[in-house]
Amino acid sequence: MLLDLMAARIERRPVAVSSLCIAAAVPATTALRWIKQLTEADLLRRVADPDDGRRVFIELTDHAAAAMEAYFAAMPAGARG
Image 1 (cartoon, rainbow, N blue to C red):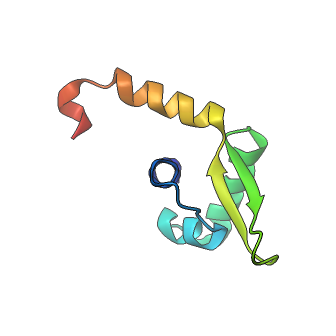
Image 2: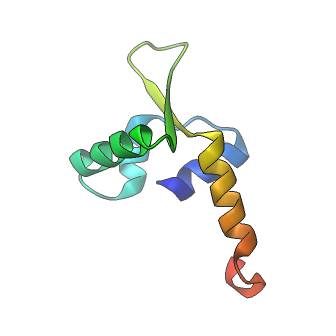
C-alpha cells in the first residue's frame, strides 16, 4: 500500500480506496483495516473526491512521504533496482 501510494504521489495521481484495496492483494476487509490503522497513525490521509461525493481518495501524509524518501535514500545503491 505504501509503495503504491508513494508511486501515486510521485506521479501526482489520486488513488481511490477501492483501487488501493485491490492493489494490496488482500481481502478488502484486511485492506480497509490497514487503511484505518495507517490513517490513525497519521501516515495516510483521506481526501474526498470533489467530483463524486461517494468516492474517497487515500494519499500519504507529508510525514509518511518524507520517511519513505529517507528509507529509499538509505538503501544501498544496488538494492534500489
